[in-house]
Image (cartoon, rainbow, N blue to C red; front, side, top):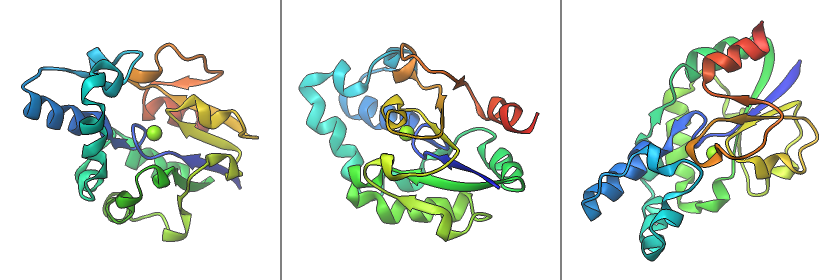
Length: 174
Ligand SMILES: [Mg+2]
């Protein structure tokens, strides 16, 4: 079986919606994902960088993120023909481990715990495909990188870019 590694934030977990909501509530702003095209919240409001990153250090931040549309159904389908690993650079926010694990158990219970990979540098990952919203993870990846469309990566070049989980299904199961 070929192996597919799949990122969490902005690929199966809707990171932006909650992050923007917390920020907007606290600073009385109306920012949307359209304001994040080609950039990041911390670059858009550099004077609040520490506060913006601070939300992510809250151990519960990652626990109740929404699931990206169709990701559960498509990954379930893919898991019949491919080995699926969830690969998240969780070391970026070490306080997130428990919440991320519980979130995966709740929403992707059909995957084995042994297929959850909490790592730092993703160049250690060996898989045939990596689905990720950050192009930097493809630099040292030996397999095929598949860029998952996200506001921050609209201007990045990618050999393969997908916009949603239905496109991923078409790519692998056609
Ligand atoms: Mg990500």
